[in-house]
Length: 226
Image (cartoon, rainbow, N blue to C red):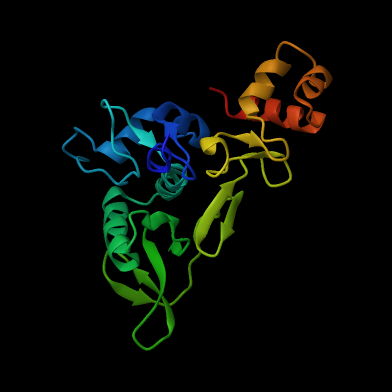
């Protein structure tokens, strides 16, 4: 397969079905489809996220960036931010930051109702821009803390679904973004499947991995049940 085709199908970007995205983020498949493809309901007809991949055969596929952005949007909604506020923030931040993934910019703050972009005004002073009203306000509010994301500069590189002290990592550069054991690279689901019919020690010997990775894979399976 040529590099162009590999890149198209997720090399270095991760690739997830809607069901897998729902499992990992805790957001329902119906909501994810609505956020990416739009709603038929006239009250919420427009999509909120762009999505990295073209739909093939009518099926939605998501990248790692799509996956993490879903977590951001869900966090804002959980804090009480309204749909009009989200849409305005998404549109204006995309224009200001020149990116199809504005919610990954790591520059957002919220007070539970409004969304602000951490920016610099014309005088060079740091301010929070209220995205819906295009007004600068002083930096006095804090955004939701989304844990377990590994950030390099403003780019989110990895997600540690059990926390950075556990060995399961979601890294778009490894195994097309499947959750894997950090050191061995064995997919977490494969380790958990084996450990469900054999002991942890037997599974560790079979795959030549540390038993800790097997235990963490089982923990991942329990928390992120299919």
